[in-house]
Image 1 (cartoon, rainbow, N blue to C red):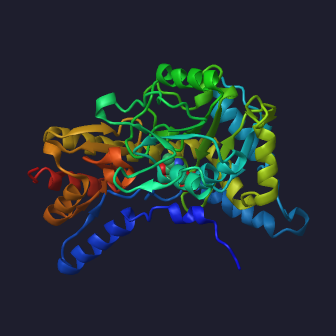
Image 2: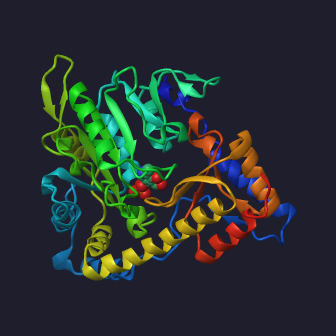
Image 3: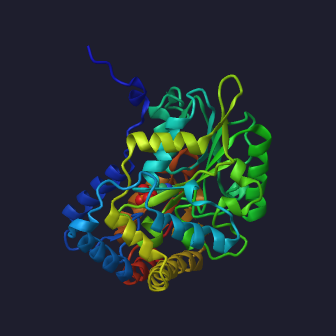
Length: 411
Ligand code: PLP
């Protein structure tokens, strides 16, 4: 008899985006003439930078030549891309990362999810609350979360670190020391960041406790504040305590193309049950060589073009476009008295609802009264209740119109 991995039964169904879709579909059915503006999506809307498109066309041509037929590529990524990553993303910021510490992949979702493979089941996991759900679900699948308590909305074995306006979205060190600490900065969903000084405290904490920081910087390209680190390795000593996940999705519009990378410094160690040191770079390399055959040649040539002068210019233009949308949302909401967070170093604006209004009630109000769609904060974790996420990934016209509409509602 085939047995299943029963950890999957501990997963909570994610009703968030399906419930949103159902509510929007029902509304459109009732009011087919109303134009619904969606500021809930976390996906890019501008076309891919032309430099990347052209590079991928050329790469497709490369494949048509017998003498240059690529076959399987290196599991860790092609040197041409890894070298650019080292130069531009790290060396230019004074960070010494080597090529064999970079693992190119098909995106940060896979890597942040798959990384749990190399860690023992009895590690204690800490996540911020609210959180990007992949960290939590993948730990549940691999048996680290324990049972879900529907009253608290929390798993018994997960350490939740609330990030709310009360602590200015800076997680506190938990009373129980975690082994694995997930930090996503700039944050999805709150759009908030930590300064170098704040992040340095976490590096020190991880070092002291022999914990690891799993640092997701998928939104790094949106940082505008010079005191906000683009990479955790800007902090001294971080190479001994952190894995960093990067994505080309929001940086360069690669959500559908699929490419990202993970940095595992060779200085980073884990421990066996008996306390023996093991190099995590080696473990991850082994994992990838067994379960992954590399991102496609065409994709990696496209990603390489991000690092050309032309590519960087085009990508910057797209990011600037989204940043302007973020500003429109932020200032628009502030003008009518909302308290807002994020949107300065991130494409997400995190709105604090006044008068104890609940996330889903605000969602319904916004949809039914002004046909604007956002994402209820509680969908990202219990501490997201009373908050609401809007994203800057829409068109400028729609963003302006959505703000005009939101200004009309009474909360
Ligand atoms: N990490 C965070 C925090 C995200 O919000 C997302 C996508 O929304 C990802 C990772 C996924 O990135 P990718 O498209 O590279 O898989």
